[in-house]
Image (cartoon, rainbow, N blue to C red):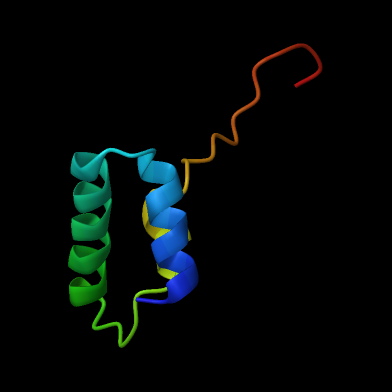
Length: 61
């Protein structure tokens, strides 16, 4: 795990060890499934990215 990712995880956990361990576990699980050699920010963004909703409802469409 990169040092930058450790800082990111700690900041997003906001002092909660439970959240920190849950996020780290999800990253480890994803890295194992993908046979990743390193857990980095790219994997973090892939795992925790918010889903994008491309449907636009409104006038003009």
